[in-house]
Image 1 (cartoon, rainbow over the protein chains, first blue to last red):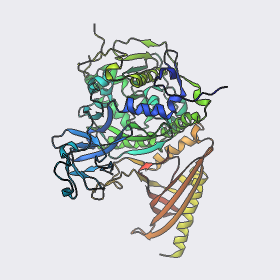
Image 2: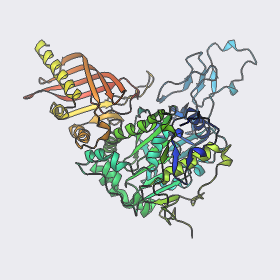
Image 3: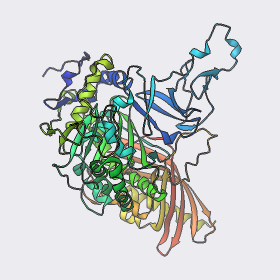
Length: 455
Length: 168
Protein backbone atom coordinates (compact mmCIF):
# COMPACT_ATOMS: atom_id res chain seq x y z
CA UNK A 1 0.00 0.00 0.00
CA UNK A 2 1.26 3.45 -0.90
CA UNK A 3 0.76 6.21 1.67
CA UNK A 4 0.95 9.66 0.13
CA UNK A 5 1.99 12.64 2.21
CA UNK A 6 -0.98 14.75 3.30
CA UNK A 7 -1.25 17.87 1.15
CA UNK A 8 -3.81 20.47 2.13
CA UNK A 9 -4.99 21.96 -1.15
CA UNK A 10 -7.78 24.00 0.44
CA UNK A 11 -10.50 21.78 -1.08
CA UNK A 12 -12.18 19.93 1.70
CA UNK A 13 -14.96 18.24 -0.27
CA UNK A 14 -12.53 15.42 -0.95
CA UNK A 15 -12.63 14.67 2.80
CA UNK A 16 -16.37 14.15 3.02
CA UNK A 17 -19.34 13.23 0.92
CA UNK A 18 -22.48 14.15 2.77
CA UNK A 19 -24.83 12.78 0.10
CA UNK A 20 -23.16 9.42 0.46
CA UNK A 21 -22.81 9.99 4.20
CA UNK A 22 -19.13 9.69 5.13
CA UNK A 23 -16.27 11.77 6.51
CA UNK A 24 -12.53 11.27 6.16
CA UNK A 25 -10.98 11.12 9.63
CA UNK A 26 -8.25 13.60 8.73
CA UNK A 27 -10.70 16.48 9.39
CA UNK A 28 -10.33 15.52 13.05
CA UNK A 29 -6.55 15.29 13.02
CA UNK A 30 -4.54 17.37 10.51
CA UNK A 31 -2.95 20.54 11.87
CA UNK A 32 -3.36 22.40 8.57
CA UNK A 33 -7.10 21.68 8.50
CA UNK A 34 -7.36 22.89 12.09
CA UNK A 35 -5.44 26.08 11.25
CA UNK A 36 -7.81 26.71 8.38
CA UNK A 37 -10.80 26.19 10.71
CA UNK A 38 -9.47 28.92 12.97
CA UNK A 39 -9.35 31.36 10.02
CA UNK A 40 -12.42 30.33 8.07
CA UNK A 41 -14.78 29.46 10.91
CA UNK A 42 -13.69 30.88 14.26
CA UNK A 43 -12.40 34.22 12.92
CA UNK A 44 -15.66 34.74 10.96
CA UNK A 45 -18.63 33.20 12.77
CA UNK A 46 -20.63 34.68 15.61
CA UNK A 47 -19.22 33.06 18.73
CA UNK A 48 -20.80 32.89 22.18
CA UNK A 49 -18.72 34.96 24.62
CA UNK A 50 -20.88 35.46 27.74
CA UNK A 51 -24.34 35.42 29.26
CA UNK A 52 -25.76 38.78 30.39
CA UNK A 53 -26.02 37.46 33.96
CA UNK A 54 -22.25 36.92 34.19
CA UNK A 55 -21.48 40.62 33.81
CA UNK A 56 -24.50 42.51 35.21
CA UNK A 57 -22.77 45.75 36.33
CA UNK A 58 -20.60 48.36 34.58
CA UNK A 59 -16.95 47.32 34.89
CA UNK A 60 -17.85 43.62 35.21
CA UNK A 61 -15.70 41.60 32.86
CA UNK A 62 -14.74 38.06 32.02
CA UNK A 63 -12.03 36.57 29.84
CA UNK A 64 -12.67 33.92 27.25
CA UNK A 65 -11.52 32.70 23.85
CA UNK A 66 -12.80 33.23 20.33
CA UNK A 67 -11.08 30.36 18.59
CA UNK A 68 -7.63 30.57 20.15
CA UNK A 69 -7.80 34.37 20.42
CA UNK A 70 -8.10 35.47 24.04
CA UNK A 71 -10.69 38.22 24.54
CA UNK A 72 -12.12 40.34 27.34
CA UNK A 73 -15.89 40.80 27.51
CA UNK A 74 -16.74 43.93 29.49
CA UNK A 75 -19.98 45.65 30.54
CA UNK A 76 -19.98 49.39 29.73
CA UNK A 77 -21.47 52.30 31.69
CA UNK A 78 -24.32 52.54 29.15
CA UNK A 79 -25.06 48.83 29.72
CA UNK A 80 -23.73 47.84 26.30
CA UNK A 81 -20.99 45.20 26.04
CA UNK A 82 -17.61 45.54 24.39
CA UNK A 83 -15.37 42.67 23.40
CA UNK A 84 -11.67 43.21 22.68
CA UNK A 85 -8.45 41.23 22.45
CA UNK A 86 -6.76 40.42 25.74
CA UNK A 87 -3.41 41.48 24.32
CA UNK A 88 -1.56 44.76 24.75
CA UNK A 89 -0.80 46.48 21.41
CA UNK A 90 2.67 47.49 22.72
CA UNK A 91 4.40 44.09 23.03
CA UNK A 92 1.44 41.70 23.09
CA UNK A 93 1.25 40.70 26.75
CA UNK A 94 -2.10 39.84 28.30
CA UNK A 95 -3.80 42.71 30.10
CA UNK A 96 -6.01 40.54 32.32
CA UNK A 97 -5.15 37.29 34.04
CA UNK A 98 -8.45 36.79 35.85
CA UNK A 99 -11.32 34.59 34.72
CA UNK A 100 -13.73 37.31 35.79
CA UNK A 101 -14.05 40.36 38.04
CA UNK A 102 -14.91 44.03 38.16
CA UNK A 103 -12.46 46.75 37.22
CA UNK A 104 -12.03 50.38 36.19
CA UNK A 105 -9.14 49.67 33.86
CA UNK A 106 -6.94 46.97 32.37
CA UNK A 107 -3.23 47.61 32.93
CA UNK A 108 -0.45 45.70 31.23
CA UNK A 109 2.13 44.25 33.65
CA UNK A 110 5.00 44.84 31.21
CA UNK A 111 5.22 48.62 30.66
CA UNK A 112 2.14 49.84 32.47
CA UNK A 113 -0.01 50.69 29.45
CA UNK A 114 -3.49 51.30 30.83
CA UNK A 115 -6.81 50.79 29.03
CA UNK A 116 -10.35 51.79 29.94
CA UNK A 117 -13.14 49.29 30.34
CA UNK A 118 -13.99 50.15 26.72
CA UNK A 119 -10.50 49.04 25.64
CA UNK A 120 -9.28 52.58 24.78
CA UNK A 121 -5.66 53.42 25.59
CA UNK A 122 -5.71 55.90 28.48
CA UNK A 123 -2.03 56.30 29.28
CA UNK A 124 1.16 54.53 30.24
CA UNK A 125 3.99 54.48 32.77
CA UNK A 126 6.60 57.27 32.16
CA UNK A 127 4.58 58.72 29.32
CA UNK A 128 7.29 61.35 28.67
CA UNK A 129 9.34 58.76 26.79
CA UNK A 130 7.01 59.27 23.84
CA UNK A 131 7.78 62.50 21.98
CA UNK A 132 5.15 64.45 20.10
CA UNK A 133 4.17 62.41 17.06
CA UNK A 134 5.40 59.07 18.47
CA UNK A 135 1.98 57.76 19.35
CA UNK A 136 -1.63 58.62 18.59
CA UNK A 137 -3.32 57.06 21.62
CA UNK A 138 -6.70 56.98 19.90
CA UNK A 139 -5.26 54.43 17.44
CA UNK A 140 -3.61 52.10 19.93
CA UNK A 141 -6.41 50.72 22.08
CA UNK A 142 -7.13 47.04 22.59
CA UNK A 143 -8.33 45.60 19.27
CA UNK A 144 -12.14 45.49 19.22
CA UNK A 145 -14.14 42.68 17.64
CA UNK A 146 -16.13 43.69 14.55
CA UNK A 147 -19.59 43.23 16.06
CA UNK A 148 -21.27 42.31 19.33
CA UNK A 149 -24.83 40.96 19.46
CA UNK A 150 -27.24 39.62 22.03
CA UNK A 151 -29.98 37.04 21.66
CA UNK A 152 -32.16 36.81 24.78
CA UNK A 153 -29.24 37.08 27.18
CA UNK A 154 -26.61 35.21 25.17
CA UNK A 155 -23.87 37.60 24.08
CA UNK A 156 -22.11 36.77 20.82
CA UNK A 157 -19.23 38.45 19.02
CA UNK A 158 -17.65 38.15 15.59
CA UNK A 159 -14.28 39.27 14.23
CA UNK A 160 -15.77 39.61 10.75
CA UNK A 161 -17.21 42.95 9.65
CA UNK A 162 -19.04 41.16 6.81
CA UNK A 163 -20.76 38.59 9.01
CA UNK A 164 -24.55 38.57 8.64
CA UNK A 165 -26.62 40.01 11.49
CA UNK A 166 -26.80 37.76 14.55
CA UNK A 167 -30.52 37.36 13.82
CA UNK A 168 -29.79 36.02 10.34
CA UNK A 169 -26.85 33.95 11.56
CA UNK A 170 -29.08 32.14 14.06
CA UNK A 171 -31.97 32.23 11.57
CA UNK A 172 -34.85 29.89 12.33
CA UNK A 173 -32.80 28.35 15.12
CA UNK A 174 -34.16 31.25 17.22
CA UNK A 175 -37.51 29.41 17.25
CA UNK A 176 -35.78 26.51 18.97
CA UNK A 177 -33.52 28.65 21.18
CA UNK A 178 -36.60 30.32 22.65
CA UNK A 179 -37.40 27.02 24.37
CA UNK A 180 -34.17 27.33 26.32
CA UNK A 181 -34.02 31.10 26.76
CA UNK A 182 -37.63 32.23 26.98
CA UNK A 183 -39.77 29.38 28.33
CA UNK A 184 -40.77 31.48 31.33
CA UNK A 185 -41.09 35.18 31.96
CA UNK A 186 -37.82 36.80 33.07
CA UNK A 187 -35.53 34.74 30.84
CA UNK A 188 -32.45 32.89 32.05
CA UNK A 189 -29.25 33.28 34.05
CA UNK A 190 -26.11 31.23 34.56
CA UNK A 191 -25.29 29.91 38.03
CA UNK A 192 -22.07 31.49 39.40
CA UNK A 193 -18.74 29.98 38.48
CA UNK A 194 -17.60 27.88 35.56
CA UNK A 195 -16.22 24.35 35.58
CA UNK A 196 -13.46 23.79 33.04
CA UNK A 197 -11.74 20.60 31.99
CA UNK A 198 -9.41 19.39 29.25
CA UNK A 199 -10.24 16.59 26.86
CA UNK A 200 -7.76 15.17 24.36
CA UNK A 201 -10.23 15.18 21.48
CA UNK A 202 -11.07 17.23 18.40
CA UNK A 203 -13.58 19.99 19.22
CA UNK A 204 -16.02 18.82 16.53
CA UNK A 205 -16.66 15.54 18.36
CA UNK A 206 -18.26 17.42 21.25
CA UNK A 207 -20.34 19.67 19.01
CA UNK A 208 -21.59 16.87 16.75
CA UNK A 209 -22.44 14.70 19.74
CA UNK A 210 -24.78 17.36 21.13
CA UNK A 211 -26.13 18.47 17.77
CA UNK A 212 -27.64 15.14 16.87
CA UNK A 213 -26.24 12.06 18.52
CA UNK A 214 -29.24 10.76 20.46
CA UNK A 215 -28.12 7.36 19.22
CA UNK A 216 -25.12 7.12 21.60
CA UNK A 217 -27.14 7.97 24.69
CA UNK A 218 -28.93 4.71 25.37
CA UNK A 219 -25.70 2.72 25.01
CA UNK A 220 -22.88 5.01 26.25
CA UNK A 221 -25.02 6.36 29.08
CA UNK A 222 -26.87 3.25 30.16
CA UNK A 223 -24.89 3.29 33.42
CA UNK A 224 -25.53 7.02 33.97
CA UNK A 225 -29.26 6.75 33.35
CA UNK A 226 -29.59 3.81 35.75
CA UNK A 227 -27.46 5.56 38.38
CA UNK A 228 -29.61 8.68 38.38
CA UNK A 229 -32.96 6.90 38.47
CA UNK A 230 -32.81 3.84 40.70
CA UNK A 231 -31.77 1.39 38.03
CA UNK A 232 -34.27 2.47 35.37
CA UNK A 233 -32.83 2.42 31.83
CA UNK A 234 -32.79 5.27 29.31
CA UNK A 235 -36.30 6.41 28.33
CA UNK A 236 -37.49 4.72 25.10
CA UNK A 237 -37.26 6.68 21.83
CA UNK A 238 -40.33 7.10 19.65
CA UNK A 239 -38.98 7.22 16.09
CA UNK A 240 -42.32 8.51 14.72
CA UNK A 241 -42.68 11.63 16.83
CA UNK A 242 -39.05 12.60 17.41
CA UNK A 243 -36.94 14.68 15.06
CA UNK A 244 -33.72 16.25 13.91
CA UNK A 245 -33.95 19.91 12.88
CA UNK A 246 -31.08 22.02 11.62
CA UNK A 247 -30.27 25.23 9.80
CA UNK A 248 -27.07 27.27 9.24
CA UNK A 249 -25.06 24.53 10.95
CA UNK A 250 -27.07 24.77 14.19
CA UNK A 251 -29.15 21.79 15.22
CA UNK A 252 -31.54 20.36 17.80
CA UNK A 253 -32.52 16.70 18.12
CA UNK A 254 -35.61 16.06 20.20
CA UNK A 255 -38.56 13.99 21.22
CA UNK A 256 -41.98 15.43 21.86
CA UNK A 257 -42.80 13.52 25.04
CA UNK A 258 -41.79 16.40 27.31
CA UNK A 259 -40.12 14.48 30.14
CA UNK A 260 -37.06 12.47 29.00
CA UNK A 261 -34.24 14.90 29.78
CA UNK A 262 -35.98 16.03 32.95
CA UNK A 263 -36.13 12.39 34.05
CA UNK A 264 -32.40 11.93 33.34
CA UNK A 265 -31.57 14.88 35.59
CA UNK A 266 -32.80 12.67 38.42
CA UNK A 267 -34.43 15.53 40.35
CA UNK A 268 -38.20 14.99 40.80
CA UNK A 269 -38.72 18.52 42.19
CA UNK A 270 -37.39 20.02 38.94
CA UNK A 271 -39.70 17.80 36.88
CA UNK A 272 -42.62 18.97 39.03
CA UNK A 273 -41.64 22.59 38.54
CA UNK A 274 -41.60 22.36 34.76
CA UNK A 275 -44.83 20.39 34.67
CA UNK A 276 -46.38 23.20 36.69
CA UNK A 277 -45.25 25.95 34.31
CA UNK A 278 -45.90 23.91 31.15
CA UNK A 279 -49.40 25.33 30.46
CA UNK A 280 -47.94 28.85 30.63
CA UNK A 281 -45.06 27.70 28.44
CA UNK A 282 -47.63 26.54 25.88
CA UNK A 283 -49.15 30.03 25.87
CA UNK A 284 -45.72 31.61 25.34
CA UNK A 285 -44.34 29.16 22.81
CA UNK A 286 -47.24 27.06 21.52
CA UNK A 287 -48.26 23.49 22.30
CA UNK A 288 -45.55 21.89 20.18
CA UNK A 289 -42.62 23.67 21.82
CA UNK A 290 -44.02 23.08 25.30
CA UNK A 291 -43.94 19.34 24.50
CA UNK A 292 -40.44 19.44 23.00
CA UNK A 293 -39.00 21.15 26.08
CA UNK A 294 -37.94 18.57 28.64
CA UNK A 295 -37.92 15.68 26.17
CA UNK A 296 -34.83 13.64 25.41
CA UNK A 297 -33.00 16.31 23.45
CA UNK A 298 -29.66 17.98 22.81
CA UNK A 299 -28.54 20.91 20.70
CA UNK A 300 -25.56 22.87 19.40
CA UNK A 301 -25.15 26.40 18.11
CA UNK A 302 -22.55 26.43 15.32
CA UNK A 303 -19.65 26.36 15.76
CA UNK A 304 -18.99 25.49 19.41
CA UNK A 305 -21.79 25.88 21.95
CA UNK A 306 -24.01 23.05 23.16
CA UNK A 307 -26.71 22.52 25.75
CA UNK A 308 -29.33 20.13 27.03
CA UNK A 309 -32.70 21.80 27.46
CA UNK A 310 -34.26 20.24 30.55
CA UNK A 311 -30.98 18.96 31.99
CA UNK A 312 -29.70 22.56 31.86
CA UNK A 313 -26.02 22.04 31.18
CA UNK A 314 -24.72 24.83 28.92
CA UNK A 315 -21.25 24.42 27.52
CA UNK A 316 -18.62 25.59 25.09
CA UNK A 317 -15.95 23.53 23.37
CA UNK A 318 -12.81 25.69 23.14
CA UNK A 319 -10.47 24.37 20.44
CA UNK A 320 -6.85 23.95 21.61
CA UNK A 321 -5.22 22.30 18.61
CA UNK A 322 -6.63 19.48 16.48
CA UNK A 323 -6.49 16.89 19.26
CA UNK A 324 -7.50 18.86 22.34
CA UNK A 325 -10.30 21.08 23.58
CA UNK A 326 -11.08 22.84 26.80
CA UNK A 327 -14.62 22.21 27.92
CA UNK A 328 -16.27 25.08 29.79
CA UNK A 329 -19.55 24.26 31.47
CA UNK A 330 -22.24 26.31 33.18
CA UNK A 331 -25.69 25.69 34.57
CA UNK A 332 -28.48 27.66 32.92
CA UNK A 333 -31.68 28.29 34.90
CA UNK A 334 -34.76 30.47 34.61
CA UNK A 335 -34.25 33.72 36.49
CA UNK A 336 -37.67 33.49 38.13
CA UNK A 337 -37.24 29.98 39.50
CA UNK A 338 -37.35 29.71 43.30
CA UNK A 339 -33.87 29.34 44.83
CA UNK A 340 -34.43 25.75 45.93
CA UNK A 341 -35.26 24.73 42.34
CA UNK A 342 -32.16 26.52 41.02
CA UNK A 343 -30.14 24.69 43.63
CA UNK A 344 -31.66 21.35 42.68
CA UNK A 345 -30.96 21.96 38.98
CA UNK A 346 -27.36 22.92 39.79
CA UNK A 347 -26.77 19.77 41.82
CA UNK A 348 -28.44 17.64 39.16
CA UNK A 349 -26.20 19.10 36.45
CA UNK A 350 -23.06 18.53 38.54
CA UNK A 351 -24.02 14.92 39.08
CA UNK A 352 -24.80 14.24 35.44
CA UNK A 353 -22.69 16.58 33.31
CA UNK A 354 -19.85 17.78 35.54
CA UNK A 355 -16.42 16.14 35.14
CA UNK A 356 -17.48 13.74 37.92
CA UNK A 357 -20.96 13.39 36.41
CA UNK A 358 -22.57 10.03 35.74
CA UNK A 359 -22.99 10.89 32.02
CA UNK A 360 -20.03 13.12 31.28
CA UNK A 361 -17.42 10.58 32.32
CA UNK A 362 -18.29 8.18 29.54
CA UNK A 363 -18.33 10.83 26.80
CA UNK A 364 -14.81 12.22 27.18
CA UNK A 365 -13.30 8.77 27.08
CA UNK A 366 -15.08 8.02 23.77
CA UNK A 367 -14.12 11.29 22.08
CA UNK A 368 -10.47 11.03 23.11
CA UNK A 369 -10.18 7.64 21.53
CA UNK A 370 -12.15 8.68 18.41
CA UNK A 371 -9.45 11.34 17.99
CA UNK A 372 -6.29 9.62 19.16
CA UNK A 373 -6.66 6.47 17.02
CA UNK A 374 -5.98 8.77 14.03
CA UNK A 375 -2.35 8.97 15.08
CA UNK A 376 -2.03 5.95 12.80
CA UNK A 377 -1.39 7.02 9.20
CA UNK A 378 -3.46 4.18 7.81
CA UNK A 379 -6.26 4.58 10.32
CA UNK A 380 -6.65 8.29 9.65
CA UNK A 381 -7.27 7.70 5.94
CA UNK A 382 -10.28 5.56 6.68
CA UNK A 383 -13.83 6.85 6.36
CA UNK A 384 -16.34 7.32 9.17
CA UNK A 385 -20.00 6.42 8.60
CA UNK A 386 -22.57 9.26 8.78
CA UNK A 387 -25.48 7.88 6.75
CA UNK A 388 -28.04 7.00 9.40
CA UNK A 389 -31.57 8.11 8.46
CA UNK A 390 -30.44 9.76 5.23
CA UNK A 391 -33.79 9.16 3.48
CA UNK A 392 -36.01 10.28 6.36
CA UNK A 393 -36.22 13.97 5.45
CA UNK A 394 -39.70 15.44 5.86
CA UNK A 395 -41.42 18.78 5.53
CA UNK A 396 -43.11 19.50 8.86
CA UNK A 397 -45.87 22.12 9.06
CA UNK A 398 -44.90 23.23 12.58
CA UNK A 399 -41.16 22.62 12.74
CA UNK A 400 -38.87 25.04 10.95
CA UNK A 401 -35.50 23.93 9.60
CA UNK A 402 -34.21 20.98 7.64
CA UNK A 403 -36.25 18.33 9.43
CA UNK A 404 -35.72 14.59 9.60
CA UNK A 405 -37.99 12.11 11.31
CA UNK A 406 -36.67 9.93 14.12
CA UNK A 407 -34.11 11.29 16.56
CA UNK A 408 -31.74 8.39 15.93
CA UNK A 409 -30.26 10.00 12.86
CA UNK A 410 -27.03 11.54 11.53
CA UNK A 411 -28.94 14.34 9.77
CA UNK A 412 -27.97 17.23 12.04
CA UNK A 413 -24.37 16.06 12.00
CA UNK A 414 -24.35 15.95 8.18
CA UNK A 415 -25.80 19.44 8.03
CA UNK A 416 -23.27 20.71 10.53
CA UNK A 417 -20.46 19.38 8.35
CA UNK A 418 -22.16 20.90 5.29
CA UNK A 419 -21.96 24.31 7.00
CA UNK A 420 -18.36 23.55 7.99
CA UNK A 421 -17.55 22.75 4.37
CA UNK A 422 -19.37 25.84 3.04
CA UNK A 423 -17.41 28.09 5.40
CA UNK A 424 -14.08 26.37 4.78
CA UNK A 425 -14.47 27.04 1.05
CA UNK A 426 -16.09 30.49 1.08
CA UNK A 427 -13.85 33.48 0.31
CA UNK A 428 -16.24 35.71 2.20
CA UNK A 429 -19.69 35.54 3.82
CA UNK A 430 -21.23 36.44 0.44
CA UNK A 431 -20.02 33.09 -0.91
CA UNK A 432 -21.63 31.03 1.85
CA UNK A 433 -24.57 29.24 0.18
CA UNK A 434 -28.00 29.20 1.82
CA UNK A 435 -28.93 25.53 2.30
CA UNK A 436 -32.37 26.31 3.73
CA UNK A 437 -34.75 29.25 3.24
CA UNK A 438 -35.86 30.50 6.62
CA UNK A 439 -39.54 30.75 7.58
CA UNK A 440 -38.98 33.31 10.29
CA UNK A 441 -36.78 35.97 8.70
CA UNK A 442 -37.75 39.26 10.30
CA UNK A 443 -40.68 37.58 12.08
CA UNK A 444 -41.61 37.14 15.73
CA UNK A 445 -40.41 33.80 17.07
CA UNK A 446 -42.56 33.78 20.20
CA UNK A 447 -46.22 32.79 20.50
CA UNK A 448 -48.23 29.72 19.50
CA UNK A 449 -48.39 30.67 15.81
CA UNK A 450 -44.69 31.26 15.17
CA UNK A 451 -42.81 28.74 13.09
CA UNK A 452 -45.74 27.40 11.07
CA UNK A 453 -45.17 27.05 7.38
CA UNK A 454 -46.96 29.86 5.59
CA UNK A 455 -50.11 29.05 3.57
CA UNK B 1 -4.04 16.83 71.66
CA UNK B 2 -3.44 13.28 72.69
CA UNK B 3 -1.08 11.26 70.54
CA UNK B 4 -3.30 8.21 70.53
CA UNK B 5 -6.14 10.19 68.95
CA UNK B 6 -3.78 11.58 66.30
CA UNK B 7 -2.61 8.06 65.52
CA UNK B 8 -6.21 6.83 65.30
CA UNK B 9 -7.15 9.61 62.88
CA UNK B 10 -4.05 9.04 60.76
CA UNK B 11 -4.80 5.34 60.53
CA UNK B 12 -8.41 6.13 59.60
CA UNK B 13 -7.30 8.42 56.77
CA UNK B 14 -4.87 5.81 55.47
CA UNK B 15 -7.53 3.12 55.59
CA UNK B 16 -9.91 5.39 53.69
CA UNK B 17 -7.22 6.01 51.05
CA UNK B 18 -6.63 2.27 50.68
CA UNK B 19 -10.35 1.57 50.21
CA UNK B 20 -10.47 4.25 47.48
CA UNK B 21 -7.35 2.82 45.79
CA UNK B 22 -9.04 -0.56 45.69
CA UNK B 23 -12.44 0.79 44.56
CA UNK B 24 -14.05 -0.67 47.70
CA UNK B 25 -16.74 1.99 47.58
CA UNK B 26 -19.36 0.19 49.69
CA UNK B 27 -16.90 0.06 52.56
CA UNK B 28 -15.91 3.66 51.88
CA UNK B 29 -19.56 4.77 52.11
CA UNK B 30 -19.62 2.91 55.42
CA UNK B 31 -17.00 5.38 56.67
CA UNK B 32 -19.29 8.37 55.98
CA UNK B 33 -21.91 9.73 58.38
CA UNK B 34 -25.56 9.97 57.30
CA UNK B 35 -25.26 13.77 57.16
CA UNK B 36 -21.98 13.91 55.20
CA UNK B 37 -21.31 17.01 53.11
CA UNK B 38 -18.73 16.28 50.43
CA UNK B 39 -17.71 19.49 48.67
CA UNK B 40 -15.13 20.35 46.05
CA UNK B 41 -15.78 23.89 44.77
CA UNK B 42 -14.73 25.08 41.33
CA UNK B 43 -12.37 27.97 41.88
CA UNK B 44 -11.93 30.72 39.33
CA UNK B 45 -8.77 32.75 38.96
CA UNK B 46 -9.52 36.20 40.33
CA UNK B 47 -7.46 39.18 41.44
CA UNK B 48 -6.50 39.46 45.11
CA UNK B 49 -8.74 42.50 45.58
CA UNK B 50 -11.76 40.50 44.35
CA UNK B 51 -13.65 39.33 47.43
CA UNK B 52 -16.11 37.03 45.61
CA UNK B 53 -16.77 34.11 47.98
CA UNK B 54 -15.77 31.11 45.94
CA UNK B 55 -15.25 28.41 48.54
CA UNK B 56 -18.12 28.65 51.00
CA UNK B 57 -20.90 29.83 48.69
CA UNK B 58 -22.73 26.56 48.14
CA UNK B 59 -24.94 27.94 45.37
CA UNK B 60 -21.96 28.19 43.00
CA UNK B 61 -20.72 25.64 40.48
CA UNK B 62 -18.71 22.82 42.02
CA UNK B 63 -17.14 19.51 41.09
CA UNK B 64 -18.83 17.92 44.10
CA UNK B 65 -21.46 19.38 46.41
CA UNK B 66 -22.96 16.13 47.59
CA UNK B 67 -24.88 14.62 50.45
CA UNK B 68 -24.86 10.88 51.12
CA UNK B 69 -27.66 10.13 48.65
CA UNK B 70 -25.87 12.11 45.91
CA UNK B 71 -22.64 10.19 46.48
CA UNK B 72 -24.48 6.88 46.40
CA UNK B 73 -26.11 7.87 43.11
CA UNK B 74 -22.71 8.54 41.53
CA UNK B 75 -21.36 5.25 42.84
CA UNK B 76 -24.38 3.34 41.55
CA UNK B 77 -23.04 3.92 38.04
CA UNK B 78 -20.18 1.51 38.77
CA UNK B 79 -22.56 -1.18 39.96
CA UNK B 80 -24.58 -1.26 36.73
CA UNK B 81 -21.95 -3.23 34.83
CA UNK B 82 -22.44 -0.92 31.83
CA UNK B 83 -20.04 1.89 32.81
CA UNK B 84 -17.96 1.08 29.74
CA UNK B 85 -15.25 3.63 30.42
CA UNK B 86 -14.53 1.99 33.81
CA UNK B 87 -13.60 -1.32 32.22
CA UNK B 88 -10.65 -1.99 32.09
CA UNK B 89 -10.36 -0.42 35.51
CA UNK B 90 -8.44 2.73 36.35
CA UNK B 91 -5.40 2.18 38.62
CA UNK B 92 -5.42 4.51 41.61
CA UNK B 93 -3.01 5.56 44.33
CA UNK B 94 -4.03 8.09 46.99
CA UNK B 95 -1.23 9.59 49.09
CA UNK B 96 -2.29 11.44 52.21
CA UNK B 97 0.12 13.76 54.03
CA UNK B 98 0.36 16.84 56.32
CA UNK B 99 -2.23 15.49 58.71
CA UNK B 100 -3.16 17.92 61.47
CA UNK B 101 -5.79 17.08 64.06
CA UNK B 102 -7.51 19.98 65.81
CA UNK B 103 -10.13 19.77 68.58
CA UNK B 104 -13.54 21.37 67.98
CA UNK B 105 -16.22 22.63 70.33
CA UNK B 106 -17.98 19.31 69.97
CA UNK B 107 -16.47 16.59 72.07
CA UNK B 108 -17.11 13.84 69.53
CA UNK B 109 -15.76 15.73 66.50
CA UNK B 110 -12.29 16.66 65.34
CA UNK B 111 -11.22 18.98 62.56
CA UNK B 112 -8.61 17.31 60.36
CA UNK B 113 -6.45 19.04 57.78
CA UNK B 114 -4.60 16.95 55.23
CA UNK B 115 -3.04 17.15 51.77
CA UNK B 116 -3.58 14.59 49.05
CA UNK B 117 -1.90 13.42 45.91
CA UNK B 118 -4.11 11.14 43.84
CA UNK B 119 -2.51 9.40 40.88
CA UNK B 120 -4.58 7.76 38.15
CA UNK B 121 -3.41 5.58 35.30
CA UNK B 122 -5.58 3.93 32.66
CA UNK B 123 -5.20 1.66 29.68
CA UNK B 124 -1.86 2.18 27.90
CA UNK B 125 -0.49 5.47 29.22
CA UNK B 126 -3.38 7.69 30.17
CA UNK B 127 -2.42 9.33 33.47
CA UNK B 128 -2.90 12.33 35.69
CA UNK B 129 -2.11 13.60 39.15
CA UNK B 130 -4.47 15.58 41.35
CA UNK B 131 -3.03 17.54 44.26
CA UNK B 132 -4.73 19.65 46.89
CA UNK B 133 -5.82 20.29 50.46
CA UNK B 134 -8.66 18.81 52.46
CA UNK B 135 -10.48 20.09 55.48
CA UNK B 136 -12.51 17.37 57.22
CA UNK B 137 -14.74 16.87 60.21
CA UNK B 138 -14.43 13.33 61.62
CA UNK B 139 -17.03 12.21 64.16
CA UNK B 140 -16.60 9.53 66.81
CA UNK B 141 -19.25 6.80 66.52
CA UNK B 142 -19.75 3.30 67.88
CA UNK B 143 -18.15 2.04 64.64
CA UNK B 144 -15.10 4.25 64.92
CA UNK B 145 -14.46 7.67 63.40
CA UNK B 146 -16.66 8.59 60.44
CA UNK B 147 -16.32 11.41 57.94
CA UNK B 148 -19.02 14.06 58.49
CA UNK B 149 -17.72 16.83 56.29
CA UNK B 150 -15.04 17.23 53.65
CA UNK B 151 -13.97 20.31 51.75
CA UNK B 152 -11.52 19.62 48.93
CA UNK B 153 -9.48 22.38 47.35
CA UNK B 154 -7.92 21.16 44.12
CA UNK B 155 -5.03 23.36 42.96
CA UNK B 156 -6.18 23.63 39.37
CA UNK B 157 -8.23 26.27 37.57
CA UNK B 158 -8.88 24.24 34.45
CA UNK B 159 -9.18 20.62 35.56
CA UNK B 160 -6.22 19.17 33.64
CA UNK B 161 -8.07 15.91 33.13
CA UNK B 162 -11.04 14.69 31.16
CA UNK B 163 -13.04 13.54 34.16
CA UNK B 164 -13.12 12.89 37.88
CA UNK B 165 -13.85 9.19 38.27
CA UNK B 166 -12.12 9.47 41.61
CA UNK B 167 -12.92 10.52 45.17
CA UNK B 168 -10.37 12.62 46.98
